[in-house]
Length: 332
Ligand code: KG4
Ligand code: ZN
Image 1 (cartoon, helix red, strand yellow):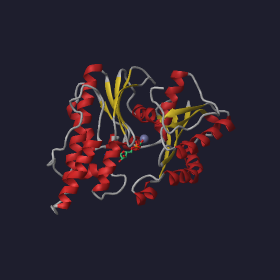
Image 2: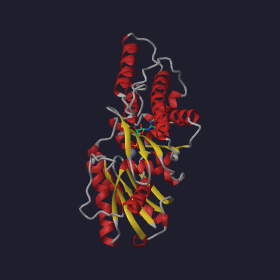
Image 3: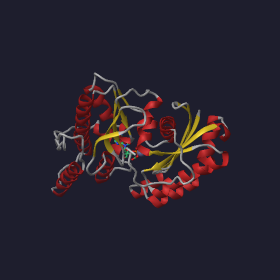
Image 4: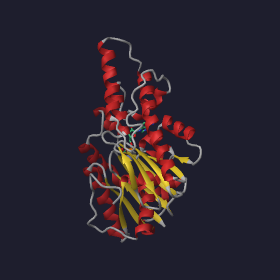
């Protein structure tokens, strides 16, 4: 079955064609990063306008690359939330037009389900599995006992990990999005600050990154005020060590309690090399999988894969009342 995926929840306009839930025939992504960079973050109003400008082109490119016709599609899967409402609506409406015009069933997909299913493209899921979801808007540990069943074990109580990366990068004067740059600089510095590892010993699977973020920012201000040397690489290394220690420690705790068969990492921060290395080094008894780099950040292939399994599992489709939702619960 050919599934058309559509993703416009933030600042990437993406359309993908995936065959039988894992064979990616096309995954076109039009990124707006260069436009939002000037503002130090995503400007929602600009994001929606850019989606409007780019969406038809991205649809055309994806169809051309896949070499199929709309009539060949078995399903359309579109991100319905969470995300920027103005951006979501562009993708949802474009998907509904194709669904109506060619009479193809449509399903609205949760963005985080998409990030989780990005792993299935190269590593078939085995249950029970544990998903560590780390993105610009989410930080959570999710248990899956079967396809399309999500049990949230814990989540951040304040900032998402990607958000903390981006804020620290801003204070250090680095470009947006800061996560990949902090990751790169971290390898050139040393963990000299020994920042706190928030909630590392708590009994639950929740996280908190805003205190750590404030500690990093205050330390930076303090050095600046005293006109002492600031080595951005050391800030990046110290922050990354603290964050990854917490993420890895909680993942190991959940793995042991729930006796999972595999661990998968999902979301933009799954691209982080420090996290990849630490998880791989510390967990050797079960496989730890990460999506390929281009499937870590927002893309429509992951939405097509998730939509396929959602359709097979729930046997339900949406109708033309399908809408975008800025907030949406993964557990349904
Ligand atoms: O999943 P994503 O593309 O968008 C959301 O759904 O939020 O994640 C984007 C986030 C940004 O905060 C970005 O800075 C972060 O992922 N990110 C990274 C890395 N690559 C992307 N954070 C740390 N290290 C990286 N290598
Ligand atoms: Zn995302």
